[in-house]
Length: 392
Ligand code: NDP
Ligand code: MG
Image 1 (cartoon, rainbow, N blue to C red):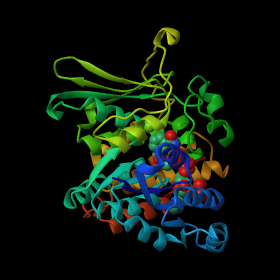
Image 2: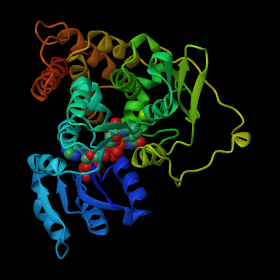
Image 3: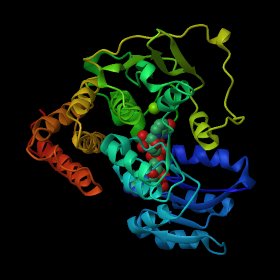
Image 4: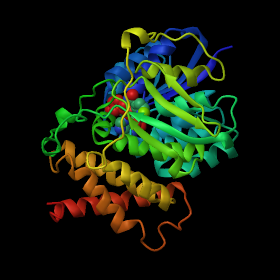
């Protein structure tokens, strides 16, 4: 029997890895929707090859280009935010949520409302609205499977275990592009330097977030939300080889480690075939050749973002949406060379200070509207801090 699938964010790094796996077993899937942003040629090419029902670009102005690129095929073309949401609402058995940023939350939510399985790469959904997402999944009998490699690793280490037996989880971090740079030099780092990852090949934004450890801070919050662990039981270790993705420590002292090559097709493939395993085209590790696996504590001065994750988890409520909104704004400003690399964490901290304890905000009911509102006021506050020169 074929499975109906959709890929939200099909033109990105995760989307393309997902398509790679689908392509290898084409007859097993009925592709419902592929969505993309500005990369219309890629979107059209994949939609035609996979015989999708509909291809949607989030970019309203690209509709004619998409129509032209799909001319002569049976793939329907659509553009804009509401078309994207409509496409995400089409029932599937499995949907990949791989849009980058807070823009991925609502499409993932409407997909969950149709039941089926949501493979969740978009970590911002859990950071900004974890409880809302999980409740929506429960209410509609939908399953959410983690795709972020560390969370997939934890999920796999938990198979057959009881969550109450977990004492701690350890999430590993490569340390990013600047793990061995002197701090003074990091302050002057350019977006190009930050966008080179030592081990993983990923989208530009998450690669820069890896250098600043905002990515790891997001992943700590993500683990806290998804697995319902206490903030103090989630640890981060720098592991330069990126082969051990995460470890789960149980109360009998056992540590279960997930070891594998840095290739997202493993975590994507695990979510695609869950609850079974299927052969996947990933490298087999030769541990004798690798010889050593190293671990060290992350230095607080080098990675201030990690401390901010603790604040967010302890505050709860809409603090995650504020944190993420401020982080996205800070990242945009860094990419646009308006602020320096280390200013990103300072800016997010200032926005959190200003907004998190604001009366009413944390007590708001979590809904798409309140999450969106928190995201917007965080971006506005961040913009204000930059334009008033308060960072220097
Ligand atoms: P990319 O930047 O490579 O791709 C992002 C995708 O989202 C593209 O399809 C892009 O379209 C689309 N997109 C961008 N902006 C919008 C928007 N406003 N509305 C709708 N679609 C949009 O990102 P990644 O694949 O690296 O990451 C995707 C998600 O997965 C992120 O949340 C990331 O944190 C997470 N993740 C990624 C990992 C990785 O290895 N890359 C690992 C773990 C998690 P287009 O390119 O056509 O403009
Ligand atoms: Mg990850």
